[in-house]
Length: 62
Image 1 (cartoon, rainbow, N blue to C red):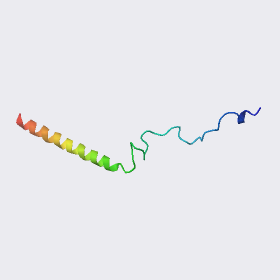
Image 2: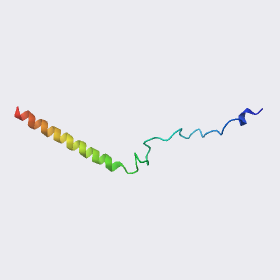
Image 3: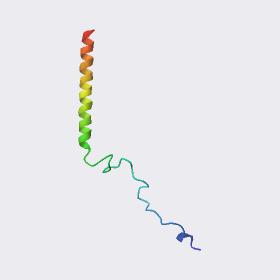
Image 4: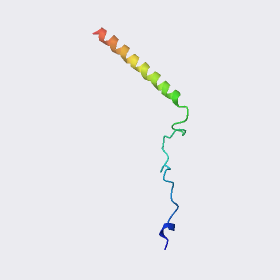
């Protein structure tokens, strides 16, 4: 009996076993999403500046 011919088709060894949930080009990570990161950084910097300004004014009141 030729055991090499039994069983299913061999899968490609270099192919990924599954697709990532956040792969580029999907709904969760679309192409050209760098603008969202720029907006996030701008919000983070604004929050840090506001926190710093609030901390400075709070220290001078004491």
